[in-house]
Every structure is written in structure tokens, then in C-alpha cells.
Length: 293
Image (cartoon, rainbow, N blue to C red):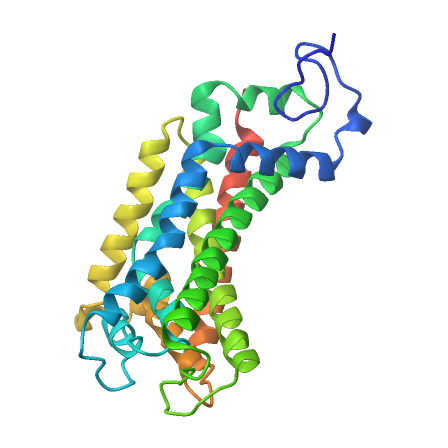
């Protein structure tokens, strides 16, 4: 009879495992199976996939498309009426304000704090897995989930836009018309940029997750921080602080829809997200490397 494997898929529960068998590829596969077999992961992905569809259908019921401009979420939603190119990016901009960061924070909370609360993290520590490799595997899982959520929203947004408006409605915010390959390239750039911002949120969530056994603490901390950052970004008196706020460049996703595409704000947002990723993962590693049990 086949014996049950431990959490990492390395060997039977309760038996020592040869260190050479704990290869990275197997650990990554085990982590991805663990993530995508959770029912709530599938539910979250399903909800995110439906958002662009609902947005596209709702926009067909209103007769106020407005001018093709606007840099914030509301402006993009207005411009998405009758525009198959703007629709997927408008959906990403809407979800990026709170929903996508919340789901990424949830994934980061489950990665360490959630498993520690349920006792499943101990199997990682019993297996021949170093703390640095453990963090890499968890960060890879969170990053993969964030990228899949973003790509899924863009995919359903593109399909919805093409079904409702057709392939001849690929208009940029600058008024130029794009072919399908050029439009898909812009959507892919938006997906990569949004995923990078979410990876920064996930890195912060992992850092907090390494300090607590309660996933709700991680989720509340990340969402609270995003809300506070959003409020601070509205205060002109604190303009000196804005370059340090993670979400201060999130509205610049609209630049992807301009022709030619300005890259200043997008590059600044990418650099800021990279700094958050480095700091968040460094703090998580510092905590895990000194944490007992």
C-alpha cells in the first residue's frame, strides 16, 4: 500500500528524507499544487475572471461613452465603452485599487502564517529545506498566483471586448487605431506591470506573515496600509512622501493606452515596486532565518 507523503511531497510522513531529494523543481510543483487545489483560490480566480465580463456588459447598457481620455480608474471605465483595447486595462485598473492587492495579500498570508496556524509548515522544516529555499518557494507561489490572476482578468477582458465591440474597436487614448497584435502587446505590458506591483504587495505580505501565525493580521495590515497610502497620496502637503508610497504610480497604468506610450511614470512605478520586493523579502528572510520551529 502506498504511504502518505509529507507536505513537500518528499517522502512518507514521519520518516527522514535524504537531503539530496529535496530538489527545487519538486518543491515548486508541490507549492503550486497546494495553491491551486485550494477551493478559495479557484473561487477568487473565478470572481476576478467575471469582473471584466460584467464591466463590458454594463458598459453596453449605458449610452455615455465620453471622450477617450482619463488617467484614473473612472476615466478608463468611461473610455472603455465601445473600446475593446481599453476594457481589459480598465478592469485591471479598477481591481488594482483594492481587489487585486487583497487577493495577493491573502495568498501571502496563507503562504507562511496560514500554514503555520494549521501546522502544515512544520513538514517543510522537517524536510531538508533551508529557510532561504523555503522563502523562495513561497515567494514563487505568491508571484505565480498574482500573475495568473492578472493574466486571467486581462484574458477575459480581451475576449469580452472582442465579442461585444469587435476587432475594429482597438482605439488608444490618443485616438489612434491599433491592430490586434499591437493591442495585445499593450495588454501584455499592462499585465506585466500590474503583476510587478502585486509582487511588491505579496513581498510585504510575506514579511508580515513571517512574524505572525494569524493570516487575518496579515490581510488587515496590508489592506490598512494600502488605504493609508491612498489617503496620504491625496494630501499635497505630504508631496515629499509620495515617491515612497507603493500605490502612488498605480494610476499611471493608463499610460499604456497612449500612443506613443510615455514610460517615465511606468518606470518609476516599476522601480518602486522592485524596492518594495527587495525590502519585503529581506525582512521575511531575516525573520525566518532567526525563527525557531
